Image (tube, rainbow, N blue to C red):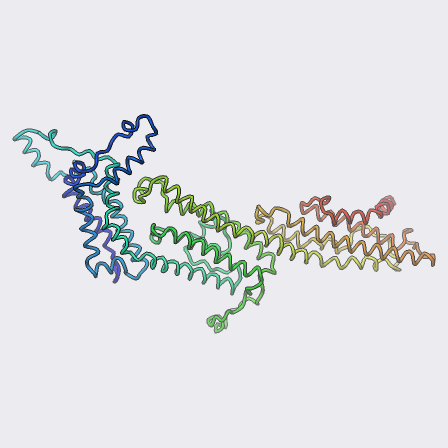
Length: 549
């Protein structure tokens, strides 16, 4: 391989295991069968008790019992490990290469070799493996007879091989060998890569907005994440792809599970912190941020500076992505971690060297950590919808209410006929809410429900009813003042100006109520709307009169 790499290490170790097994496998098996502690029958020793419970006890006894002659550990593994640790050049190249990819490859090769060493050396050799000896054996049998049934034939069970592997792991040389790896430095190098990738993406979002194309992974990976999980914004695709890369076979190292798990939580917290700062108005999008490349580029047209928490569309998009992330962290992402750290297939579990109980405990621990980190997402989503989006849309919907005062001026001293339809401004009151709801109803987080709509309509209806109440009070005062001049009634339709105003307010209320019901909100549950109906109920008889003519 390239300079500094140990590209042939895996094949060298594999060749060592195969060569030793082919040349000395029979001796190793005989030694293991003769000197290993005898395996006692679980059911015989413990009666009719739970066999599974006592099997663990029996296994522990087999592992802890010393072995007089341990050729697998002392005759094979210890010399190999000693050779790797003794030579300074080899030691530096394998244990401290200074390159994350090389160190990971070296560790994986030696970890695979070590975890499979007992099974590789003690496996039964098939007859076809010794075809070159068949002619000699046949000649001996022909001369003196077949006495193979008198030879010692060791019987090695799966438990025997596991006990042998356990002795390898417990040997002082293995402990010393494991300490040679500078794994914390490896994690720091990897985590720096993850942070750099994420920070670069967040910087792109700060310059170009949430829809900036900041994804740097493979297109097929982006499509898979989109199709399977539903992420849409590139920054969240980048985040989740980075989280997945932490557990790939060419990155992850099992002794660093706790560090990688903590790193995943920190990366999610980094993005969540960025979102929180934006929602608090502390991050301005579209600014140059001192980037000389952007400043020197005459063709680049940047976004005008803005605060994204003032845009309900941005808030809705981001909170929807956070909702997906919240679900993924405790489900899909947990499965990725569990499949890597606590594999279920037999071949992978053989190299993990953990009992079923330990694997279940590790899975539960990872679940608790991810669950705790995801709990920080829900309050952000709730605040965004029930406070920011509600306040923003309430302000937009309240703007047309200023036209309520103009209803009186429309009919005062104008001799206009009585109204037959609602005022034009009524249809525009809830238009911002309707447009937003039609675009983001399918992206409303399940835990939010429709409460946010009730809040907006409730507040707007209350403001509307207050404006109508003030207008009706003004109309009544005006009518009282005109009584003395005997000009209360106008000739047009036989209604006074005040009655025309009240009829118009009644028609406006009917239209507004219809707009509310189109949004799926129960009008009777909105206090402001009920009050509005009570204020305009007096004009219902005027409406019926106008309809009968």
